[in-house]
Image: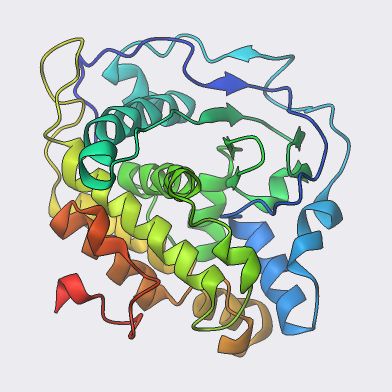
Length: 309
């Protein structure tokens, strides 16, 4: 999915470098990506504590890498910038997510949308959920209501997990993490900690719901107008775009990651859901555009969302 060349975005929405407080806050960061997912899966396969994963992956917090100091992302003003630069693409995707959820969340749920913080980092970072390195991949920390991204993860997703490198594959990842923020607002995110692993676990249902919320965003993103220009931020979705998103969802399924990392699939260790499930719940949100279509907690069959029957 590409942005309209003339789309405009208010600068300063996304922060770079730096980090939040280092306290654990009693909460686990959600949505870890490639390296973090592999380590998390292996920990669960062999009896590890998922709550300690961020601590195990922590390192120095100097944020060494492409970002120096702290500030806001600059020089990302047009859709052309977003199409050419991955950091700008994150910035514009977040702006599009804000626009969609500001128009949809309260009418559908009665809860007014509050914008999360979004921070790009490289190397390592201190968060309200503890210290983390880029190995964790993108994640959302409910303790500080912030989504964290090292954009080098998008290439890892292609190289190590076989995802498409298309724009919507990357935008899906951003939308998934903001989906966790929606869960935080609606009071559902804690279910992952209460029931942290297994094919029917609360953790899997939380992750699949975030996939579905990413689909809700995709449903509305190409039609809701940019308030600055009166036109949609995004060009209309193509079949290739949807294939990109489904490819990304599939590539980080627990079954696929377990098979690649250990040579076997163990549903008892699942934390995110299978490739098939992740694609199905994204599709449920995309086809309906409705938060109600994302009720994974009431679903009896996670392979077959009610909205797709």
